[in-house]
Amino acid sequence: MKQSVREQQWADWMRSAIDGDAQAYNRFLLAVTPRLRMMARRRCEQFGAPAGEAEDIVQEVLLAVHLKRGSWDPARPIGPWLSTIVRNKLIDSLRRRGRRISVPIEDVVETLEAPSDTDNFDRQDALTLLQRLKDPQRDIVRSISIEGAGVRETAVRLKMSEGAVRVALHRALKSLATLYRSET
Amino acid sequence: MKTDELIRLLSEDAPVRLRLGRMLVLALCVGILFSGTLFLASVGLRHNLVSAVETLRVAFKIGVTLALAIVGFGLLTRIGRPGAVISSWIAALAGVLATVAIAVAAELLTVPQAAWGANLSGQHAAFCLFFIPVLSLAPLAAFLTALREGAPEDPGRAGAAAGLAASAIGAALYAWHCPDDSPLFVATWYTLAITLVTAVGYVAGRRLLRW
Image (tube, rainbow over all chains, first blue to last red):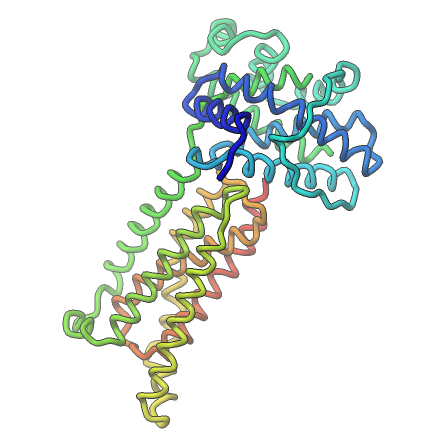
């Protein structure tokens, strides 16, 4: 099977991520997101959804990729896995937003990037989502995402062990995905 | 939350604790251990096993249920993985079904017509229909739990695959006890029990395996 250089790079990053390399994972997510954004915007346009929803959909897809990354077999190419997850989540998300749709499988690896100009409309929704997390999940999420602290710093700040922060963070991400599903 | 902020959050949660492949192998071990213990502690092996296993019909019964269990589990290792190809396992499944059909044909050719009815209804059809699903329960629960770490494209179908693999394990265990050896019996009652559990898996999958 032929793989592009880009796909191999993504697979390498993901393999390191699975073993716990946060930097490699960050690179992977930053590389994938602009392409997801392009796909989400195209679908929103196609089905007459407001452009603001595209960024919500991007976040939902990212959460799905994150929570399901254990289902990727590191011995196989990452492209088909990623494309299928993204397509299923796009369908799921658009359907919940009330549109009957069919989405073709698109190659995430080969999709163009969309510029990120998302500052205006993605803050409101997610803040209300954050409010609905329980403590200490909410504090941990706020500390890492908005204030930009690492796990260690957050642990010190909240007087928790690093392990406890990691566990709570993982639970928080699961809750966020569930909230997304019930909200929209 | 901005998408950049979400990405920062996800990056801090980089390591994967529960990999689907390992979860499924673990579920397989737990299921076999649990149901195997239940099997040995309740009905146990048949008394004349050593002499019986040498007959072709008994060897067929044990072999075909084991083959189905292997194929069912193979299918399961793929079905929770987005983009994975399952066609080779579907072909293997068809191969097992074809083997059953051939065995039934052979039985019909060699056994006089007058004995067909008695061979089909056997001695313990009701117990077979009850006990194979009972032996499937632990593997089914374990497989469904493991599959929750996966991302099946069709949750119902994934649940059905879990039901198939689990009931094939149940059948592969029960075959070591079952005194009814005719392929007519196996093709009827085993299939019925397996279909039942597969249907239960389908319904459970639709509820439990959405993501």
